[in-house]
Length: 232
Length: 232
Image (spheres, rainbow over the protein chains, first blue to last red):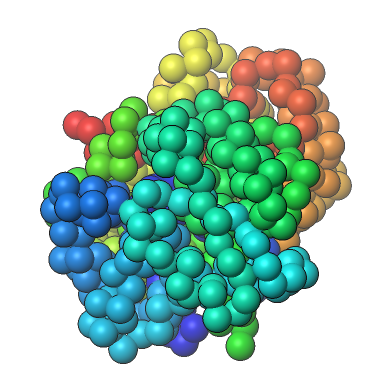
């Protein structure tokens, strides 16, 4: 489609992808249609469940992820954003399979922590059980001096995991109270900021009052990274 | 990408396309990612301005529209939705150029009028100057017994046209008062419902209190038509 066309490998979940498109548009400085960023969104919600696969209970999503990458390459995209944290467990395999740069959502979250002025030290990370088990945040942020604490196993089972499923089923409002409770528990344990490290979580958190500590919305963070790429 | 993949020819404007993706997702009955509708959104905000072209002051958008259709065909889509009313001025030329069915946004609006129980008679239609001048709604709805009244020329210049431009520039909240005033004027002239016949208009109207008469959101109407196609 031309130079600087963004490819979005999405559908994981589809509501998070739509919200990514909305935030990408609203965060872009533009005075008319023609100043916005050309984008192709490949929203394939049929990608096998990433969490089930990583926990050894489901089909490998990689072939469907690679099919999406091929589609975005064919459309003429110049870089790829993936508004799903858990899918970044397959980041190296995807990056090895394409010549297009894939913007890493954890790097985008780190840039957002810096933009918000969050000093090195203890931060909280919420995400799917697979994202946390794969240590996507813990390992990639450690070098920058952020020490990640996570919800406890009982909080994951009672609060975080069911809320992610509720957003995927379009029951967004009911996800707010449990997600806010889990985030508050991390802040109470000394986190100076909480990363919403699953793109369903900011949708739930947006459905209620703002939290009284810094949060990193990984949808917004990835949108800012994509705008940075497009306008470079 | 497989059977029943929806293609969305978008970017006109990009915020309306993102909102279409959001409403498509929220209106789909789904309990998990894999029950949502696979969709490719080709969001190309570089399509030349449709209103300027139709009013004889700008470049023909058809070549860029056809490039988008080719991209969606190559991605394996089975039908096309275009969340831009004015682009439907090129509907026949686009439909002649592809074997994929293109869902017509005015037919989707008519289905929504029926769904809301709006009886035949006088209705109001707001849209771009080009959409109204091309008689997209007046001619296509006349057979069903709806008689369309339009904003007056001075209302278009003072209220509707600047509001559409404001939404395209991400200044959504400031579009509400003028758009609501134009819609109220149509209701005062006897319209029993008002069709928001430009996909920027529902974004502005959603930024303030609900209007006290039936309105047809053409983003939602097209999303319902697309879901009907995908689930058929």
